[in-house]
Length: 306
Length: 313
Image: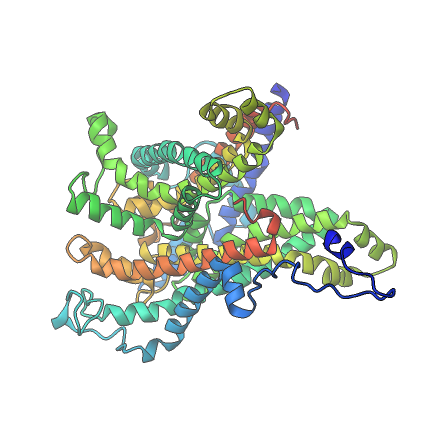
């Protein structure tokens, strides 16, 4: 650039605009949706797959499904065909309809647990980070809870309560939220050392305002990433609980329940287990890709590492 | 060094006490009436009352907790409500299959995952790296029972390379024992392999940028020596940490894997106990697994000081 400007004729003291053919052609900047897909392919792919599953869950009654609980004993364990796209189970229920409706349970559990665990973890983490005397006690309790493998903790809670979707959500939330509280506490403790937080304290800003203006914005990014992973893990745990008979009530079609019912017959009728398994795996994959993409976008330093 | 280890061992005691207190309190903080839930819908009020007494719910919390902890310290986890046998006996009967499954999975996972992560870091940015990391994302996403059924269908039913289900005790010979464990171990190991491989890659990427790696390369060391001796040794701490933390995944996954492959271990005991709402058994298994988990991570912590002499507490 500098070389080319010096060769310009300096006419009568006027700054002449460079004739500009020597400027490099601008790099092709992709804007809008295409640009986003180009820069964040994992978010785009994971997001699209998740939206597809959401549509399936919402539109389940309109996707050519029949009543997912309708029994038809004369049409038991039919292989997939034009009439029964995914076949029928041992009670003659249409597996395609059951799988479509099952999306509702998985997504409802995944999203509810992600939101509830984030809120509970945020509350406990903030208290622990701000209230010095409570920190030790709270964190010891969280350590204790994290020492119990999450699936086992959820199983224990389910053994003590009646089978219902609400109890499944509660049990998985209790098992997952200590990790969020650790994360939030860590952020609070590191932010407390920041000069601008010191300045806010010195200026007489009250704690709620500091939390709102300084702490929350800084926890949002790591918490969002954590929430997507919790969502994925919650969907797997729900399926596992249902699969071993300690989760969603058998009357409600969920992917774990369909697989539990296909368990006894899987060697001769593998399709009963196959279809819910594929949908569950795809949904969890979508959420995990979304989480990985969000992490790379929100924390570029980590982007090329994990 | 020794004082550090002793201090670390002592510090796990309060954690275990909190785990025990928490597991015990669940009976009291669970919503509704656990005695009624455990008794089932058809139970008469007398049955519910009997269960309430047998769980000790009719007595004050602290008195009951003191008595319960005292029993645990004497290796007494209570009595099964369904079989009437001591929980410790039931656990001892089922210990071998679960222990075998976990040990085989652990060895298999580490042997596969660490080289995977090292190669991915070495070839970072190439298609090899991308393929390995894509596999890792799949490993995270496909639930253990899905992998289990897939493997059993392909390698046992179709190809007939391995037995479909079941377990052969080690006393019946090493080979039949291992043959029965290969498929369950691969299924259970998938998530674990994905986790370890990702952390290994991340940790190695950091180490490979260090000056001493350049020095090693400039003095003419072979690629293998640099990667597996110089770099891996310095990248070891996060890898060992995640191997310890990941044990929780193995424990949770074992419950499901044993159901898929019909292995008569602790996982099956758990599932049977849930279906019968045999709470003392569930409580005993959860407590045992949690203590094992705490102890494994204690060992990991002690390993740090051996792997990285800079770490002092």
